Amino acid sequence: MEETLGAVANARQVFDRWMAWRPGAPGWTSYVKFELRYGEVGRARAVFERFVAEHPRADAFLRYAGFEEKSGEMERARRVYERAADVLADDEEEAGTLFVAFAEFEECGEVERARAIRKYALDRVPKGRTEELHRKLLALEKQFGDRKGIEDAIVAKRS
Image 1 (cartoon, helix red, strand yellow):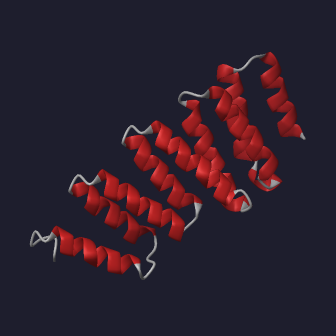
Image 2: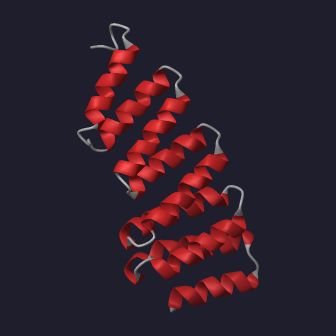
């Protein structure tokens, strides 16, 4: 209602009060979209910072990193992924999801980093969740690697 009346500052206060109730991802996403409708990229970034602090989960960090990628802020996106890796390192489920996305992000320009992330993830993620990681590592090696890298990826998958 506040927004339709043009009272953007009041609408922002409503969102802030709503966020105090700790809503799920859709609530935070609505707040980010609100800020972006008014061209407030810095405020949207601040909302994402609060979101990942409140909900330190892979999906929250991935939304934030995706926002930075779409904004053309690749270094910021990389820092979000790196921070997420630090925060989620002990949570095997969350880390698996994160590392797959982080490695895909790095494939766009940093093949060596993508390779290192995939190998790191294979050591951290439970064996039952590594099939996709192995498949993507092998695809990466086939595209950018040499014969030894491909052989290593195949051997790692078998073990």
